[in-house]
Amino acid sequence: MGMRFFEKMTEKEFNKLWVDVVFQQQFTSHGEWLGKYGPQVDPDAASTTFALLSLYNSVGFLLKEDLVDPELLFSYVGPITIFRAWRKLEPLVKGWREKNNDPTFFDAFEYLYNEMSERYSQMTVFNI
Image: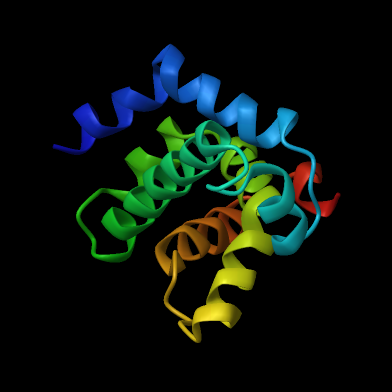
């Protein structure tokens, strides 16, 4: 199950999602994202964002629940992709958590980020 899931991360469609969200969307806050890319303003961009969030949250869930070998995961998924995606999307996730009073919203993605950054803390990308 795990390898088929991770193979999706090598497909063009996933990489397009990642590039669209991490490099094309320009925002620094939840409110700014809603105004530029929210579901009622740009449904396509919102769908892209939610797809990326959901995928990384699923990967984090597999890790958190010990359903995937951490060594396999960390050797297969590049830390820079997790780091950049979380840093970009963190304001959205935290904004939704606050707005909905739900501290668990996409918490598995944050768990993935924390585990990845702990494991690779010596990488300069984490010190940006």
